Each structure stands twice: as C-alpha cells, then as structure tokens.
Image: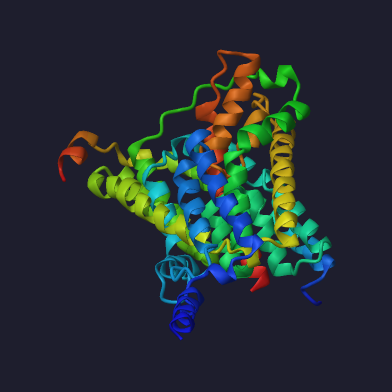
Length: 375
Length: 52
C-alpha cells in the first residue's frame, strides 16, 4: 500500500513536468539554440541577436515551460511583436544612431536602393511556385530586403505562422552577407570597374539634416500608410539626433531603448521556434528562397549601377549597387572591402552608405506597396 | 482575378518593383531640393548643443 501510494505520488509529480512530452524535435531545436549561442560567443556572429534568440529557442522547446503559454513572460514579449510595437521601436533606435548625410549628399544614388530589391520579387514568385499562398510568398519575399524589423513587420501582417522561419532567415543572412555577396559582386564586375574611385561628397548642412526626417515623415505617411509606423519612428529617432537640442533623448533611443527592445524582440522570436512549428519542410524552403533573394538582390543592385553608368558622364563604382540591399551598415562595408581588394586606397564606405540607407526606404516602399495591393 | 495565383504574383511583382523605383526616384528628386533650404541661413550648432 505504501509502495502503491509512493508510485502514485511520483506518477503525479512526473505528469506535471514536461518530461513525458519530450520528443526528438525538442532535442533538435534545443541543439539549434545551443548552436546559435556558440556562433554568437565563439564566432561573434550577431551576438546581440543570437544569444537571446538561442536561449529562448532552448527554453521554448522544453516541454512544460510556462513562459511561452498565454500569460507567460515570453508570450508578453511576443505580443510586442504581434501588436507591431517592437519593430518600430527598433527603427526608432536605429534612426537615432544613423547619419543620413551620405544619402542626402548624393541623391542620384538612391535609385540603387530600389534596384537592389529585385531579389524580393524573385523570391516571391519562387515561393508561389513552391505552393505558398500569395500572402506567405509576399512575407518570404521581403527577406530579400535584408531588413530585420521590416521582415518581422511584413510577416506579422501577411503570414504570422511563418514568423520564426522568416525572422531567423532574414537575420542569419544579414550576418552572412560578407560571405554571400562578394562572389556575386566579383562575377558581375571587371577589375577596372571595381577600381573606379568616387569624387568626394559635399558637406550636408544642419538645416538639411533637420529637414530630411520631417520631409520623409510627411511623404511616407501621405503615400504609404501601411509602413508609416516603421519609417516614422526611424525619422523621429533621426530628428532627435540631428536637432542637437535633444541629445539625451537621442542617446537614450540609441542605447537604453534599443537594448531593451533587442532583448524583448530576440526573446519573442526565439519563443516562436517551437519544434512542431519550425521543423517542417517549409522551413527549408524559406531558407533556400531567402538565399536566392539575397543573391538576386546583390546582382540586380550591381547591374542597376552599371545601367546607371550608361547615362552618367562620371561613372560610379558598380559595387555601390550591391550596397542598395538594406542591411545597414553591413552591405556598405562589404562593398568597401571588395573594392579594397583591387585598390587598397579606394575607400568606398561613405559613398556606399548612401545606397545602403536608401535601401531601407526601398524595402519599406516595396513592402508598403505589397501591403496596399494585398490587403 | 483571384489573388492566389502565379499570374497575380508576377503582376504584383512587376507593379511593386517599378512603382518603388519611381517613388524612390521621387524621393531622390526631393532630396535634390534640400540644398535650397540653405538659403534661409545657417544654424549656430554650438548654441544648439549648449542649450539643453
């Protein structure tokens, strides 16, 4: 009888833990989470993102964890994503630390910020061919814009069931851009083209720097209300930075706000990486389509720059076209580094920031038009 | 036309790509006008930094 009672006691104890519900998928995803943390710590790949995503991926795949259930801590973090509060706050911080001077100084190159987004539509059509719905295809396509908050924004709006795959693919490829882009850039350009040096950019005045976010804020809210939250907050952060009289607010936005939002965002994304939702065939398809989007985007940006050169007396370095992918400042750094391989004195970074920053607007425009046509 | 078709995806892509090129070109044209604001005069950045 005592043995019976003891067995019942242990049985009841075991039933309220998650041990009985553990399956191989959980083990795989826990290993993925550990892998992300190792990549962050040892290889220093996007540590600010991968540590949080990796840890919450591990915890979310431990059966019985209350954190991901309704009312749990990670669930509340996810609500910040679902209600589209966190992505605009990320842009708020980004705006407060961004110098849009290169873009303002050379407005002729902003078109590269749209030319480099052909990858979005190649991936969209590819996803449709693979059987995804048009909404899912649109969300997958935006991976090609190389803009994390925008990818999350579009995914929540169009295909929330694919949020874990899309956000992981978008942020992973952004971190891998120094590996993905250069082969495409070298393939599509000659050594002579890569060695083209750019003229020094003009100085942008304080008046222009202050007017820029105000003008863009008006334009985006007037023409593209669906994506206005993201760009408006980007511009608000930038305005705090440029007016100089709100330095403490700009510093708070760029540091404390940004850090808190990154913690919540990464925990939210990782918490959606549950094995039953993540370990599916569509995950592999999304990952492959994301890579295709990046490759085509890089290529279309470079070709866009070469087409632009047909109309310009003073040629631009076509490597700047690849910087039109929105991942700021990674894509600009990649263009700069590839140019240095052929000419160690050819410093393209400041010039490449122009199309790189324009790429943020290019992704927002593509996404906003897509939302307007689909919703 | 039903939206969930390949044809719609292609049309959506073409419209989106070229429309975003047109809109960003428009933004570029507006940015070309920004230097005109410099005719209003320069700002005293030192006093702006001090005054908060």
